[in-house]
Amino acid sequence: MKEQDKISANEITPPTVYFNRRNFIRTGILAASAVATGAAYRRLNPVAMGEVKTAKLEGVISAPSATNAATGFRVDEPETSFEDITHYNNFYEFSTDKEGVASAAQGFDTKGWQVSVEGLVNKPKVFGLDDLLKISPPEERIYRMRCVEGWSMVIPWAGFSLSKLLDVVEPTSDANFVAFETLLDPKRMPGQRSDVLNWPYVEGLRLDEAMHPLAILASGIYGRALPPQDGAPIRLVTPWKYGFKGIKSIVKIKLVAEQPRTSWSEYAPNEYGFYANVNPQVDHPRWSQATEQRIGESGRRPTLMFNGYEEQVGYLYAGIDLRKNF
Amino acid sequence: MKENDIRFIKLLILVNGLVPLALLVWDQGHQQLGANPQNFLILTTGMMTLIFLVLTMAVTPLRKITGWNWLIQFRRMLGLYAFFYGCLHFLCFFSLDRGFSVSSTLTEMLKRKYLIVGSTALIVMIPLAITSTNAMIKRLGGKRWRALHRLAYVAAIAGVIHYYMQVKADVRQPLVFAAVLAVLLGYRLVVYLRQTKPAKAAAPAAKPG
Image 1 (tube, rainbow over the protein chains, first blue to last red):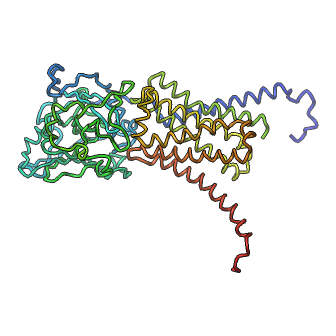
Image 2: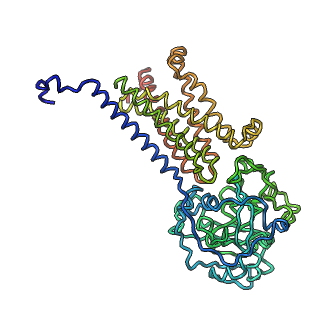
């Protein structure tokens, strides 16, 4: 103010008004800063669960009743909600943030998908997805899913036993293992642009494990086609093993003589083994596997041997030291 | 800085520090903490602890570089927020993950080493919180108080290691915390070395160079 001396006394803002204005501005700053902090928090922790819609699967054969549970095809526990199954995923090809996979995988294009079944088989074949799904009608399988991180779900899959595919290609007598491979395409799978894991993701099973009726190739959940975040268009499900064995978005299945390399055991051999059978008595080196957090429940449940499928699969591991072969 | 302005900035920090907690409580009430709310609460409170620890550690370097000495007046508040969120973090784990069971918490600690590291971080913060009052500073004397409060370094380092140890594979986020912390601690080391060097140089004449 240049002409300060010309301001008459009654033009000077009275102290009460001045302080009111200052308080007003301060309240504004306070509110604005709180909103900015809140917005930053929201950006880092978005709450919206985007709606997931995939095609309805036709002719899904429902799982046998709970009273006929000896097969393990239907577990008599409350199913995890579709929202949770499709918004809490470990699928590093899209994001290492379990709650960020759904949005990162949105729009993943599976048109023209092919699965090459090769190696030690009499009838190798590159299947188009439709041909592959025609091998056997989809069956509903309600399985427990136990993640190696200590959480679990109950998921109504739609799929058919892997053994049916293997019967079609006829493994030779030299085949001892089945090796699986996920699509490698950093353009469609942005997570593959960082080298968190050695891409492509690979998994494997012993041939007798692969032939077990509980091991399925799944193409759906809740009677709908698999959403991308759950492994579209086709994935492996082995309910007695930790979730990471269930390789997603499969493009190659190869019958081999020697035990194939697997992604997580290659990443940390002392933490993740080839078998990766759910076992409450064998802890992960950094955490206990005795209990699990069932998604949708509070508190923790005890983890069951072979994830509750001991009756069905226990014989596969007779005489094997499960502490060494974890 | 006028006393009045300092008070206002303190209010600003107080309110903004509570915003994440308010949103956590709000989201919990509206059941929108995601598929694994227990985990989300534990993770987010832990993250807030680390953020406030880093902010606390940033005060001194920032003050010395900018010459804004009044910044020091907000350090206690930031440190107490770190302790506050650290306590919430532990309470979430103790209640939601361990069902208020002391024995299960202890056995779990023996199995998971990162829990021991995390507990160390929280435990060393306790004397710091207790001695954070003006009266305690006076009682201890500036020198002893400062020495004691170097435990904050232990808390911050242990906190970041605790986070790093439990990540399954993607260590990028804990490494960001580690990098920021390294810069803040590195600054102190450089200052310390520079302060001790002249003393050495002043000692018996060096050979002519």
